[in-house]
Every structure is written in structure tokens, then in C-alpha cells.
Image 1 (cartoon, rainbow, N blue to C red):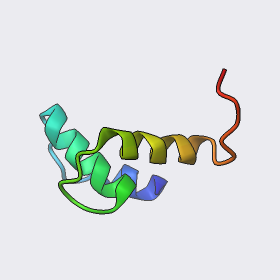
Image 2 (tube, rainbow, N blue to C red):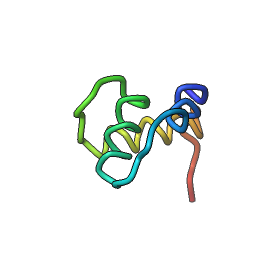
Image 3 (cartoon, rainbow, N blue to C red):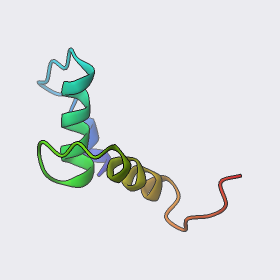
Image 4 (tube, helix red, strand yellow):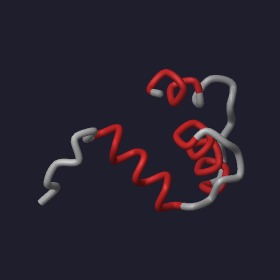
Length: 56
């Protein structure tokens, strides 16, 4: 996953936040044009804290 995120910076000229989110969602969730912010945020949270510990 980290390698895929790093590859977003190679050869891409991301100029708009919508384009950034589309690229991010494709890498994190695995398919294009997926715009459910909750799913992408949950997946990112799982990557940061796979155990789902107490965030407080």
C-alpha cells in the first residue's frame, strides 16, 4: 500500500483536490471513482492502527 501511494507522485500532476481524492481512493480502496469518504477514511485508519485501539 505504501509503495502504491508513493507511486502516485511519479508521473502524475495532481492539481485539484478532487483528482487527489480519486487517486487516493483508487489506491486505498482499490477501484476508481469510489467517492465514499467514510470507506476511504476507515481503510486509512486501519492501516495506521490495525488493532483498532482506543483513539482517545
